[in-house]
Every structure is written in structure tokens, then in C-alpha cells.
Amino acid sequence: MLQQQLPRIVLTDPNGSSAEVLLYGGHIVSWKNQRKEELLFMSSKAKWKQHKAIRGGISACFARFGDVGSVEQNGMTRNRMWSLDRDPSPLPPINDHSSIDLILKSTGVDLKTPRSFELRLRISLSAGNLILIPRVRNTDNKPFSFAFSLCNYLSVSDISEVRIEGLETLDYVDNLMNRSRFTEQADAITFDGETDRVYLHSPNKIAIIDHEKKRTFVLQKNALPDSVVWNPWNKKAKALPDLGDDDYKMMICVNSAAIDTPILLKPSEEWKGYQEISTVSSSYCSGQLDPNKVLHGFQ
Image (cartoon, rainbow, N blue to C red; front, side):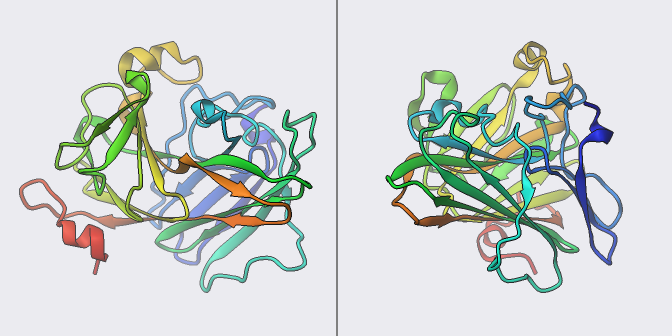
């Protein structure tokens, strides 16, 4: 199936920004600002086929707890066709935002899970930001626990010129070191090789600074206590069939997640998360973003 054949919804803003959302995977495959600059990374070798997850953009990854080692690769929610959510009591609208509500219901055999659930996703676009509100409801008669991640492939000019602020001093799990735990010692995260880490109990606001573009992504989140940072670098990129050899240079994954501690839902209970990504122009002093702005907001 070609990219153009996949049904999609296009959200637009009066100021000129836009987002494209596929019903396949509930996947955001484009987010452009008012200047029509693409803010999300899509792999040059992305597989636009059903039953295959699409590498790039923003997608929701849902996994039963115990499968957390594969939550990023989990195709359970990313390779199914979602539907428009016609819930009679949806989330209230967000002022000045263009929104779409999607839903994916478990089918037991199809999703290879013994538990019944509903996964909803509100996607809202405004002039300066993109908001995602995921919700998971237990429609089973037994409790279950799960891990969850919003996988954000962000477009950058050059990964070697990118730094992430807000994760310093945190404990993290290094998936390249047999999931061993370490404490971040650097003042900011920079990149000179493959990175695959889960930062635990991360703050609700993180800054991803692109020095070359003088642009900063500000990622805010709630009820998603962990942050996944991933870049495959050159050797791993060449080994991934759905990633171009040099694509790693133009992308960074910073995912909002609940991985280390399971989310437990009793029957009929619902969990709700929140993520907001915005962009601001960056100005630098000694190559760093003012940490007070990261913590307290941009004026």
C-alpha cells in the first residue's frame, strides 16, 4: 500500500501550520509550522504497508507490562487501523485548537492480548504546538498493567549539533548495556554514538536544542514519568531495513513514556496521559539554553 493510499486526516491552523494523521496506526506523519517547515522526521525507507509499523513521525506504543523490552518496537497499536472516536462524551475542546479524536479497541486474537481495552488518542494542533492526550480504559473484568510510550521522531539539522536539557543528574536504564542503571553526569545530553536510554522520573518539561537551526523543541508531559532517548547512529542505521543509512543524522527520538513502573488499571478504570510539543527560536550564551527558561517557560 502506497503512502498516498492510506486514509488520513489533515489538521490545519489559520496561521498556516498543519498536521497529517493516518488512521493506520493513529500515526502523525507530518507536522509543519507556519513557515511550512517540517518538524517531524520520516525515514527515507519507511514501509508504507499494512501490518508494518511506519518509522518516523509520532505514534502511540502500548504493551502489556512484561513486554516492556519491546515497547518501542511493539506494533500492537501501530499496525492496526484506528477509527474516529464518536464517544458521546469526548474530552472538552481546547480553545484555538484543531482536533481529532481516534480510538482503537482490542480484538483479543488480533492484538494477541488476553485483556480487553480501549485506547483513545486526542490530537490537537494550534499555531505553536501539538498536543496529544492518550487514554487507556480497561474494558475487561480483570485488572491489567501496561507500559506506554508516545514515540516522537523529531527532525533536526545535524544530530551532532543537538543537545537535550532537563535530564541531567537523572538515573537512566541503558539498553545498550544490558539494561544496567547509571546516573547522568553530563550537564546536557549530546550525541557522538548510538544512544538508547530510558531516563527515570524525568521532569515534566524537557528542551531539545538544535544549534544549527537555532530552534528548540519544548516537550511537556504529564502522567508519563519516563523519557526515552534514542538514536541508532551509523552502524545500527545500516542494519535497519526501514531506515536510510544517513537518516540518523537528521533525527532524534525523545519519547514520553511510562516504562519503569507499570500502569495498573482495575476493570472500568481509565488512565490519561498528556504531551505537548512546541517550538521556540533559540538564542545562546556559552552554547547553552538558559536553564531557567527550560524550567519556568519561555517569554
